[in-house]
Length: 237
Image (cartoon, rainbow, N blue to C red):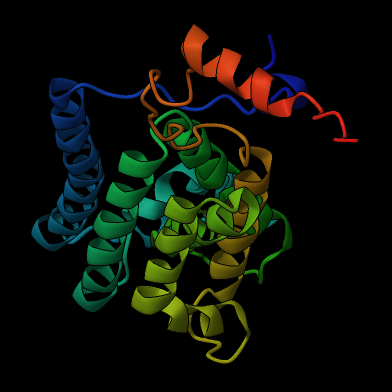
């Protein structure tokens, strides 16, 4: 069965309600998983400082065979400490929001954003080494924003507005304004995140509101009274 089969993923089923224990476990996973990735980013930079070995050569080099491994390796490589810091906090916040709010599709969306944005950079970007996790940060941000646009439920829309409040300014990063940065990585991440938000727009929807089953149910006596009241009254002569 195809992972991204259009018919399979757009069933429109609401997510099941979680128990307190399940929600607590989800909270831990939402915190822990982004931290693991960020730790690997920092370990890579630490290795560079300790060994003096430049890792930038393992970034994405567009349209070169030797640049293909960079699709997987480039998010762990950063040019300097400022570059690493600028990606670490957004990655954690957006990664947390993505896992906690869209738990059924978060991993699939992450894999798609990771591979699709990296491949598009390799295919279409300028012929320079492209490094950093910015493509993932942009992918997460655009996934979260457009999930609210496409899903049109209150929870997702509120999250979209929160993303705009936090990171609305990053939209300028997808344009070739500062040529020293990989704006192509930003753009491809944004495209991948927006696309996968559309694909998963009907998956992992919030649970429907609970209703008291007794509400709205009428007993036999009330039904009989309603039927009597609905009978036409004959005219008086």
